Amino acid sequence: MTTGERRNPGDPDARALVERIIRVDQAGEFGAVRIYQGQLAGLRWTGREGSEAGRKIAAMARAEREHNKVFDRLLAERRVRPTVLSPLWHVAGFALGAATALMGDKAAMACTVAIEETIDEHYAKQAAELGDDEAPLRATIEKFRAEEIEHKDTALAAGAEQAPAYMPLTAAIKAGSRLAIWLSTRL
Image 1: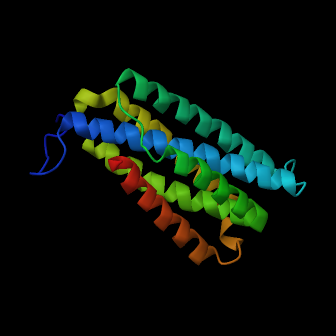
Image 2: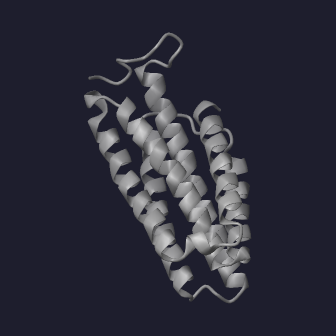
């Protein structure tokens, strides 16, 4: 199978599909970096940056920075324009991270669960859309998907589900993430 082979009328062609994938993934990884920067700032402001949660968040942040570097490189190599919403994700990501960290370690971990569950679904869909002609991009997405699942599992093991208002908090973050994905794919 090749990329775009199973497209319906009105769906983007293979080139446009790959551009959308790279655009939204770069935006998502940039947003993730900003969320973790916000969380680390919130932990620092409350004197908890050296806590177990702080160490876990710092490790996840390092992985997200590496993911972001890869998609930054792909934007340049493939000559894909980034989303025009990057300034919004810069602010919104940091604010979400800081707010959840200020709510407590478990809320910060709940944020990670919500984001990573959404990204798991998103990356799985993208991997299925890419054909053998885009095997390296598909492999990158699958590798990053596995790492995002590890982040979710780390957050669950750290007690994310014990966060105050876990269900509404994660539902709101997932809804926001899905909207950000939809917008960044297109704009």
